[in-house]
Image 1 (cartoon, rainbow over the protein chains, first blue to last red):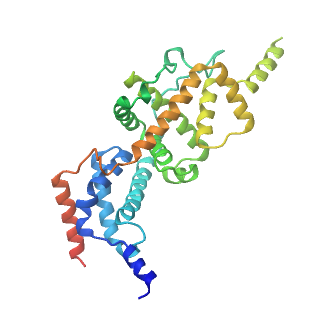
Image 2 (image 1 turned 30 degrees about the vertical axis):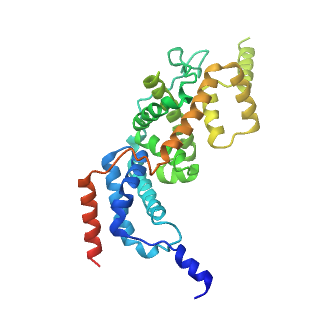
Image 3 (image 1 turned 180 degrees about the horizontal axis):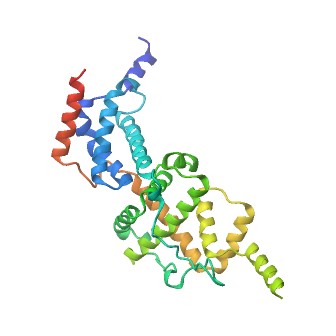
Length: 195
Length: 100
C-alpha cells in the first residue's frame, strides 16, 4: 500500500447507524426545530432522516463526516416540509395590513400609529441577546406558513430567490412581495413584544 | 391648472419614493440587486425619513439574528429529545437494520 492511499484510508469517515440517535439525535433535532418551529414536526423530520439515511448508506463515500452527511439529508427533509406547507392557495392569505396609509396625499407613508420606534442600543447588548432571539422565534412562528417558508429558505438556508420559489411555490414577483410584507410584519411583531 | 398639478405630481413621484416603496427597495438592496437610479432615490428618501432609516437598521439587525438562530452550537443545545423519543427512534433504526 502506498503512503497516500494509507492516508486516504485514515481520513475516510465511517457510518455507525447504531449510534446515530445517541451521537446526533439532539443536534439534528435542534437544527430542525429552529427551522420548522414545531417540536412534533422536528421529531418526525429527524426520524425520517435516519430512515432515509439507512437506505442511502451506499451513497456515503466517507468524504464528509457522518454528521455532515446526515445534515444534508435532514436539510432536504426540512425543505420537503416547507414545500408541503406552502402549497395550497389559502396559505398565502394573511390578515396582516401594511403599516402604510392607503390613500390621500400621504399614500404609502407610515401610518402615524405604526411608525417604527427607536430600539436604541438595547438590541446590541449581549444581555438582551437571548431575550431578543426568543421573541424572534415567536414572531417567526406567527408568520403565515408560506411566508415563513420563504423566509427560512432565504435567510437561514441562504438559497437564491429562484431556488426559494421552486421549493415554496412562489413566482419571482410574488417572492419580493412576500419578503417585503414578512419583514414589515416581523419587525413590528418584535417591536410590540420587546419594547 | 389641474393638468399642471398632475404633471408636478408625476414629476415628484418620479424622484421621490414613499415609505412603502423605500422599505421595499431596502429589502431588495439587501438580498438582491437594485438599479443605480433606485439607489439614488433610496438615498434621497432616507436622508429625509428617519422612520425608514430606523426600519433599515432594524431589518438588517433582524436578518443577522435570524441567521445566528440557524447556527446550532453542539455544545449548547437548547432542546433535548426525551428518552422515550430516543428509544423509539433507536427501535426504528434497529428494525430497519435487521431487515437486511
